[in-house]
Length: 310
Image 1 (tube, one colour):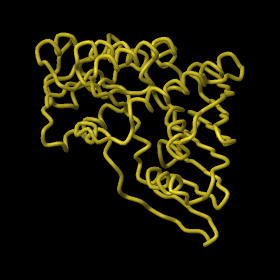
Image 2 (image 1 turned 90 degrees about the vertical axis):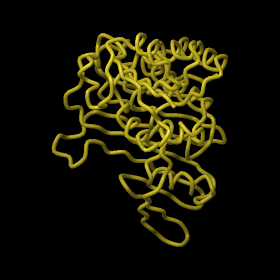
Image 3 (image 1 turned 180 degrees about the vertical axis):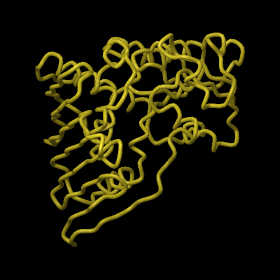
């Protein structure tokens, strides 16, 4: 299976590390996704580097493209690959606005390619195991979900201040928390009321109404202190009629009628590797839906207005 890499932003290196574990993977080249990246950014792949992804595709005829450019360009490159019947594993968000998302979904479906995206944090062992427990009824009927993603800002590329290239903090960071909410609940998103401030947006807050009277929220920020022991602080708290579960770092805490237990899961699927084998646990339909919710949340924050999702 011939695999090429377009861009080196986001989670592309995690995809590379996982795919290295697949015996049939043959890495045929890597290339920048745009002029905002340089070939030197790809040197850690230790494979042939091209200065043009179009030339790389023409010369190598890959089976799979791992697409992870500057975030706002992801949809354009996915479309380019899909039109050439190249399977795609790409960064999220998969599109930069709702109109591009609608067109991209149509292109991907009509092309028949195998498509997935880098929702790796669904498969962090603690979140993955806790989500399975909740969906199996471990805390009864879900009533409330609060999800958090807090990061150090550090040194970011200049294009983070260009909305057309960055896409926004809700679609880039908040989409992981939106994914957790859906993964834990499997409930449809109905309405969104969101706020964000800054350029790039340094803090954001989203409140969601889900079907069956479930309430959910997401808070995102880049204000994690530089002195913190970890780069990020990811958490989710899910309240049910028969218990509460809280997930953070490498553990989850379950409180129910039997008391309180702390669990440290270590096993979960490898999304990128499983993608190559066609056995991933996230569907293209889910990916398009999650992207729509994230982009709609950004729109709600821009307009400072509650939005109903069609």
